Length: 623
Image (cartoon, rainbow, N blue to C red):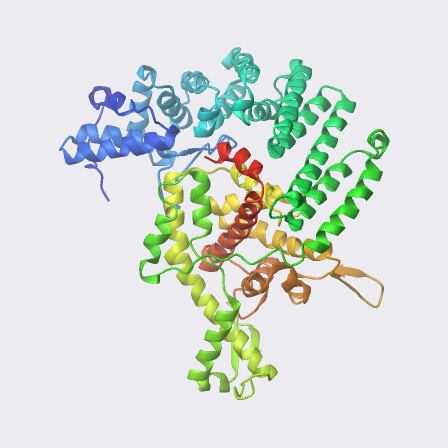
C-alpha cells in the first residue's frame, strides 16, 4: 500500500517542520520499538491531514526506528521487526539514496541520542563512500544511553554492544573511545546494587565479551561474589547461582583458582538447596528436585579431578546421586501432558490474539504458548473410531502413503471394523487419528498460532537470552542442553524455522532418551558383535515406560509429529535431509516449534508455582 506519492521530495527544512521532537516527548518511551510506533502513527495522521511532505519525513523516521539492532553481525546489523507470509518490514537496503542523504544532513542536529544514533549508523552503513564521521557520531550517541536496568532491557544493551563493535572496527580512528566506554561500564558496575537485579551481571558479560575490565578483575570478582551471597541469603537461588557462576569466571581470569572452584561449589550447592525447597514445599515436586540434583552433579563434575579433594567433590557426587535416584523414583507420573481449555473455533483467531495482546512480555509468551491445547488421545481415538464407523468403506480398502518424491513410505491393509481388538482395526484407527491430528495442526497454526505470534512480534522484542533463561528453568530440559533449546526457540520466534527445526529434532530425541535413562530404562540395542548403539526416537517412544514418564497425550504428539510415516515424520525427514527449503515453513514445522515452547513453558510455570524465587528473579529480565 502506497503511504505517500512516490515523487514526494523532502529536505532538512521539511524535517524541521515535521514536529518530530514533540512526537518523542513521551516519558513512557520503550526504546526503538516505541519510537517506530509513535512515528508511524504521526505519519499516518500527517498524510490524512494532507501534509504529504511532513508525512514522508515521519515515515522515513518510523522505518529507520522499526528495525531490530543485531550487533553480532558486522555486515547485517539491522533485521526486520516482522517477517510473515513471504513479506517483511523495512531493511536498510529499502532506503533510497536520497533518504540516506537526508539522514546525513539532519543527524548532527538531532538532540535525541536514540534517533541520532540510528540515523548516523544507517548513514555509515549505506552511504558510499563511507564517512567515518557518521560512525563516530553513532558511537557517541549510543554511549550516552544510560547504563541502568530499564534502558538495558529496552535495547540499551544492543546499543552499547554496537558502539563497542563500531569503535573496534575504526581502530585508531576512534581515538580513546574504547577506554572511555570501558570506564563507563565499570562505573555503572560500581553503582549497581541488589535492587538492580541482574544489571551487574549483564555489565560484566559485556565486559567479558570484549576483554574489558582486566585491570580490575579481582575487584569485580569480589563484588559478584557478594551479590551472590546476598541473593542466597534472601532465598533467591536463581540470581545467586547466576552471580556465583559469573564470579567463578572472573576469579579464574584473575588467576585465583581456589576462589573459582569455591564459587563453582556454591553454584552446585545452590541447586541442592533449591531441590530441598521443592521437596519441603506444600506441594512437593520430586520430579523438579531430581532435575535440580542432576544439575548439581553436572556442575560438580566440571571441577578438575586434581582440585576435588579440598571440597570432597567425589564423595558429594555419590551422596547427590543417591538423593537424585530416590527423588526420581518418587517422581514417576508427575510429568503430565500439557492441557488448556477448549477454544470456540468461530472466534479462535481473535481469542488467540487477545491471549497475547496488551500483556507484559512474560505473560504474553505464556499466553502464546497456551493459545491451544495439545491433542487429547482419548477424544481423538473416540472421534476416529466414530469416523470409521460412519464411513466403513474407508476402512475396508487398503491405503498407501507416498513421500514427496513418490516413494511408498507406508501401507495399511483393509480392516473389518467388527473386530475392535484386531491388529488391522487398531492400525486403521491409529492412521485415522494421525490424519485427524494433521488436519487439526493446520487449523491451530493458521487460526491460533500465527495470529498470536503476529501480535507477539508487534508488541514485544524478545531476544535469544530471554528464551535461554526460560529454558534454563525447565525441569524437562537435560543438563547442558539449555542453550541449544533456547537458541532453537528463539530461531522459531525470529522466523528462522530452518535453524529451529534442525536444533529441536535431535535435542527432543536426546530429552526423551535422557528422561528414560533417569528412570532406569534401557535405551540401547546390543547386536551380535557386542556393539551397543542408541535407539532412535521412534523406538524410544514405543517403550511402554514412555507413557509413564511423559503421559499418553504428549507421547502421541511426539509420535504423530516426529516418528510416524503417515504424519509429517519430521525426525526422519530431518535426519535424511529430505526437506527442501519451502518445507521448513509448513504448518507442521511451525507447530513443532510451538509445541516445544509449550512443553517447556508448562514445566517452568509448574515449577514456579511451587517456588516464588524463580518467578521473581526472572520477572525483571523478561518484562
